[in-house]
Image (tube, rainbow, N blue to C red; front, side, top):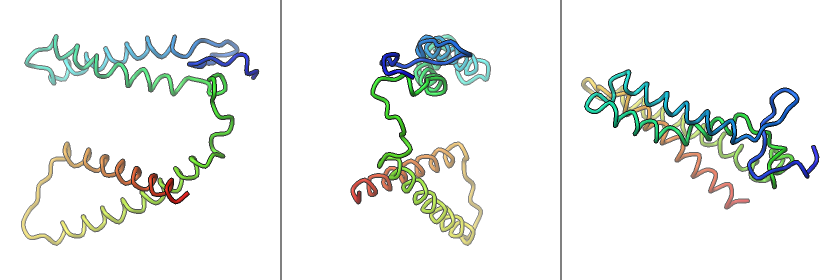
Length: 154
């Protein structure tokens, strides 16, 4: 592709044609946000005030949904300043090492935690709605720390 066809926000390819990526991502994000708001109302999450709940959920979900659609459809070769081979960059190497090492850390931490909990006397009840997000946060923190250590190490 020529560098002259690159734009700030990039384009999406559909068949042989091209469309500005944000022209697809923004309406899709709005629809997905509205769908999330409707789902919140339909499942009873917003029982106290369904109208307000719908708008709060729709507003909060629209931007992440738009970004998700954009990332899924944009052609990297049409974005101004995009690196041609991002997998060959130093940062990609740091990311690969950080991901593999943080996964090893996660296995170790969860293994030790599982062993300790197995030998504690009494019955322990946990709320998965709290435990699973805590594990996700732990994953993000481990990766972030490992990435910063890799970057510092060079």
